[in-house]
Length: 353
Ligand code: NAD
Ligand code: GLY
Image (cartoon, rainbow, N blue to C red; front, side, top):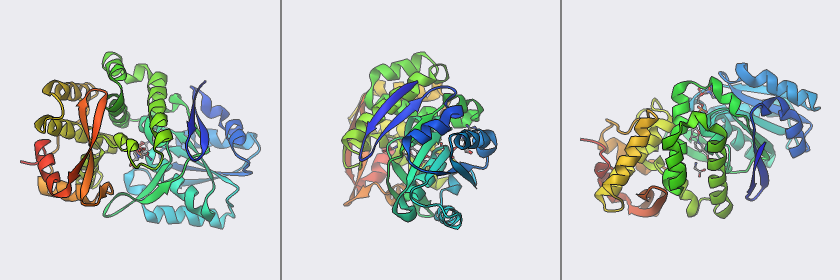
């Protein structure tokens, strides 16, 4: 078993091993003093893995309940958050119990926010079932739901008690969703490691899953340990996200998060070349690896709509937006761009006519 230790406002382990799911009960038991566990999963994931998790938790001595969410980004709403809280209350769950988020980033973000706020905070455990959740969203404690006006507009920082990552669970992930996770993996290479980027070029992610997951989690851990509350360094993890969130919003979430991040990464790297931050060679490397993993690199949404959506994004502070701009593979700068220049950056990124 590979273990990554996170030292944020809460200390916890990320455990990575094939077959871990069957042992999740004893591992959750060791990480919390809870007596009752509520398994929360989407309606596509629960039928695949819910029973196995519940059985393991029951064998470890937990009284187990489950709650099934609708699937997809559209499920990450205040309404579903409220329904989950009401379920917990009706079932007399207390803050000494534990929530187990079994799923991708949507389930993890929503469950984490419920855990952070229900009775002023209770333990939660992340069991990521998507590549994106394994390498990114399950670690670091960002929790949120969306508003109609923008993604992740309501949420807080709240660390899990434990992250259990079983790469076997990715075997049932649809190809398109796996590719979305690849976009976040590539993001780590571009923002922080030439060596890792080259490994992703040389060997398919699917053939080096444990190595890829552990490398990304270690990189994220190193960033979160220094800047848990996203005041500086952590913004690097938003590479591709500022423009990406605008793509998601303009598509009404028809474009998946990872696809949007890929488009956002390509656009910001094009803009970086136009603005003199990086070379054409770096851009070609970024476009080539996104293509290698069958990820999109452009969008037809109009510039006006994209700029408006980007400016609604929560990363807007004090009349400026922080953009993560590639300088070379493995190194990015955080650039404060006045809001009135965002449209120009997007245009330079190839967005709009
Ligand atoms: P997701 O949670 O919507 O899961 C993708 C789809 O795959 C869903 O339809 C789900 O039902 C299905 N699925 C999940 N696991 C499966 C499995 N093992 N087998 C079969 N089907 C499975 O999407 P995601 O890409 O995991 O997460 C995206 C979300 O994560 C976004 O809301 C994004 O904002 C958020 N996010 C959060 C952070 C963070 O730090 N908290 C970081 C990155 C992204
Ligand atoms: N995925 C961005 C972050 O965790 O900060």
